[in-house]
Image (cartoon, rainbow, N blue to C red; front, side, top):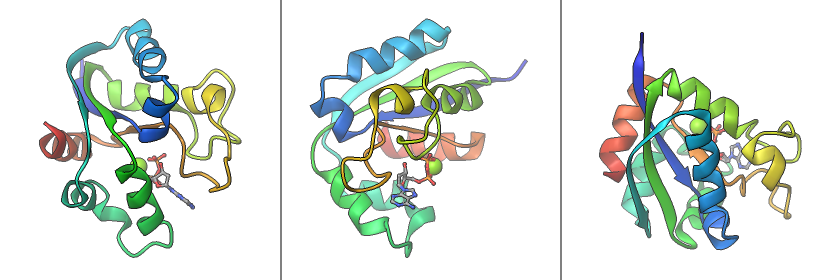
Length: 137
Ligand code: DAT
Ligand code: MG
């Protein structure tokens, strides 16, 4: 058994499009347990910490601007292998090619900024999850 926690963010595009409930519902329907939840307008410092691994990449500044553009839903979900399981539910980073059946594949597409508006964030490792949860909760 490897019970884990992961940080899920419904990004500003998902909140603005009234998809927060549909997205959280899919995660719950898969059987993961909602452990904490809030709507938050992120601050720049918070986003710099969250996206530290991407500092210096060409998409870094546009990504921060996008994440500052409106509130996000932050959630902690728990369960066996939830980190891997949520990333599978979310689908590929680029929503245009994310598989149908995934959150990004079903709800997302390119709106002119390639892969930026892809609806959700999910932690990618146990270490990232614990680091990110401390940033948002
Ligand atoms: P993921 O969110 O699938 O873990 P990531 O950690 O590589 O992807 O990147 C974080 C976010 O940055 C991603 O959700 C969208 C944006 N991003 C990634 N690669 C990008 C690119 N090549 N162009 C524009 N935005 C990008
Ligand atoms: Mg990532």
